[in-house]
Every structure is written in structure tokens, then in C-alpha cells.
Length: 300
Image: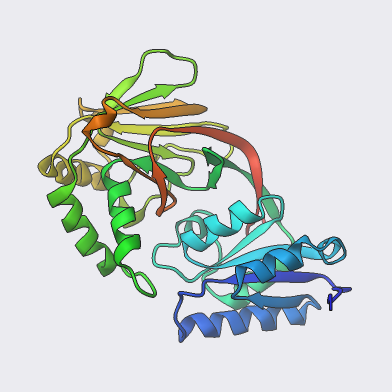
């Protein structure tokens, strides 16, 4: 039996791999805040159930937002399933990069008040072979780390969860060469690590894409050109300090479209990731979609 939402309502996608404790309290506070404004909250742990409810034409008429209650992985999952619906973020993950960039409240009560105020803004979104992302997509070493983390993870991720995947990548990743084609330029940039930033937000405090803007219709593309465990550590230090653009073996450019292909495919596969989640391998084509996503933000 279909439940018709006659009042304004909000669909809340909870990450089923998140824990309890604070995360549960914040969900309760979010629901209470919404109810105080006569907005009906509906929490979904099952993605398919949320998709069915959001897809019902009658229910959709009064839908205010889909809330991604989790980390950046939950956000990108919701964005890919419902890019046409305004998105709000309840930051319950490890990094919460999008929420931090948008200056969103960390508490459920504050997010409920923000949704009730109804202030939204359009931001650019990246698309990589049909998959949307809000923050950054990359090919190479850090994508290998993302794939390895996904393979070994269980439950909620912490910063310590990255130690083993990073150590494995330093020992095992071979750094195959990549060609990076930008817009209509036929001459590629050669490198071993490519980071395509839609927003100036990256994990571990690294200043990747630090000049990216959310509303200019372009990526900031960072290409690291030397491959070894030592070079990855060296690059990480420079990225953390924000001095990487001064290095002669780092190229930082802007582009609306990016194509990444392996120089010699028989040298091994090159992993690819979007917003911290595995997304297959290169070759891959990316494009920036100007103003394609509406997000809730604090009012002026």
C-alpha cells in the first residue's frame, strides 16, 4: 500500500554501515527538528525502498530534500541516485568534506533548522563515464588505496583504517604511466597520478585542487609525474604543505573535460576512484556539469 505524503517531507538515507552512539542521536535530533516545523522525516536504511518512495509522483510533489546521513561515500551514492532532488548532508562520516566545504552544521538539530529555512545553492558536479562526483576523482596511487580500503573495510571508517591500505599501496603499486588529455588539446600531459578536483576539498588535510571553485564549470587537474614509493611520500608532504604547484614534476591545470588513458595497457591496470569510493579502472572520460546539483546551505 502506497503511503501518500500530504505534508512536506524529507527522505533520510542512513548509511547501513554506520554505527550507533552519536550517529543515532543526531538522526533523532534531525527528525525532532523537522517535526517542529511540520516536516515529516522518513529514515531509510534500504536504498531500494527510498528509491521507490522518492520515485512515486504523488510523494515526490511534497519532497523537500534527500538527506545523506553518513560520510562522503553516502553523499555521492545519493547524488548518483537522485541528482534532480535537492541534497542535504548530515555529516556522520570520517572526513565529511562536502559538509565542511558547505559550512553545514555538524548536529542533526542544526541541519533540521537549515532545511526548514529552505536556503539552497547550485554547485558544479563532475561526471566520470556516467558516474557523478562532488569532490574529486583520481587515477593512480590514491585510487589504489581506495580500492584496497574497500576490500578490507568492515563497519565505520576511521583515519586509522587507511594505514594498512596506504602501506600496501607503497609496497605493491607499480605506478603505470598515464596520458591526460584536456578539453580539445591533442597533446597529453604524461604522469602516474591524476587528481581531478571539482571542489577544493580532499582528505587527510592534503591541499589537492585548492584553487577549485564550485561554480566555474571547470576542474582543477593535478598531475604527478614521477612514480615510486619515495615520490608518493614526497608528493604527499608537498600536497599537505600546499607547495606542490612549485614542483617541476607537478602539473596543475584547469579543464572542462578530461580523458585519462594508460600509456601502455599491458603494464597493468590503473585503478580509478570518485569521492573516495572505487570506480573501476582507466581509461575514463570526465566532464564538469555546471550548476547540476542543488544543495542546502546556511542562509545569509
